[in-house]
Image (cartoon, rainbow, N blue to C red; front, side, top):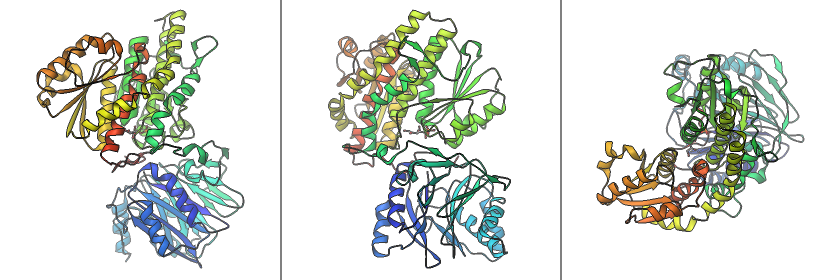
Length: 606
Ligand code: F6R
């Protein structure tokens, strides 16, 4: 989603605004722009497309400002074009915005009736016009901002420049995050810690409804009621170094390779290596829980489905998993004795956050499995269960997915023990198995070359089916999601047993069918499905383990052999091949791996 940076600097800010926008590229965007105060007046430079296009504009027309704001835009209202790119200007006001203003057409009509004209199709321009109107009625900048905010409904994080004010940037947040960065004689605003990461690691997170005025030396923060507020300044670890690609071509490639370490760090936080027992923070009484309600979107939702398999099977604790955007609007019936668990890499996904708040309002205890521990979700739940895989930059989630599954596996073991479903010795055995996962994931990543060869073939396909049973079913969903979002090839994941109930009609000699089947209790049934597919000319890519390879029906066109492992950690070990497959198909097709078209990393609008 849109990224924001603001700098009240002592020297020229153009280069630094661009540097920060590059850090924000991972969020997904389709145009970019910057603005700064030059000789008392705000000037803008904008371009549709990548930041390179904006740099080209700046090469011919530099922006010599020491105060400036910048933005990467992911189109919501109005298509991706230079005209709709931020910053937007109305009179003395120029601003950037992340979020959606829900009452914008109403406001726009009212402003038009007063003689205002609009040059873009965006909701953002309306905010600029409102602030300018309030300035026009004689209010000083901060009061004008507050008066405008009071008229908005919807979600926003904004950064505002005012003509004639060369030591001021104002900001506000509601629904979308915004941070204030504290530098040495300079101050920053950013949509997240990474935006200001190149300049400072001292950060304050604004709270819901806060607005702020920064100058070169200070931030004046006000709460939703307009009262001066203090927000804790934290030193964060999102340093510039953590988000470099290193020797990898793409962040996604790096992040796939980061997984053994990411899972190791995550698992280490959920087990006690001295006793080989689980060690779950937060004091949740798993024995007393009636059920768990997981809410999430996309890949995080698929991790949740995996959690259901694990927790119900090991702990006999009912788990409901629902796509957050459906959950929040269908008025589900909830019980106070349940635990709500939000799963979100970013901790900011608008639908997941709303679903979480819905559960909290029903009196449920709440927990969040998040990567961004300073995120809104992390701050609003009773218990935070962090993953420790480091910042994930590639838009397609990889290392966060396996780290989420690592946490869910540890939770399942702990819940099983607390509910008397396993004894201490079995808990210790499982913890030891879980601790083997990072090594086996590393071995699985070694399949890279074999998978790359398969990818060359898959890249020619128009449709691909992914099939799996048991925990391999969610993984089939994940494989299909990864392939379609990265390579734009149509792909569907199915429970292998569903094949005969419809999808088998799609099988022909042009449709590759990826079957995920380690040699586990589901294997024989998956092997039968494989035979059914091959009998109809289907081209099978069989992802299994050495034992599965030995028992496979003859005729699978390609076999990828992952390391043999305990079924408990098969979802972790089998993830790398499907991620690598999607990655190499995208590379083969020349697609933009780290920023697939139309996608955003952190979906902070509904
Ligand atoms: C897919 C992907 C998305 C995210 C989804 C939720 O590769 O990355 O489907 O999983 O947008 O995002 P978070 O986890 O930040 O809530």
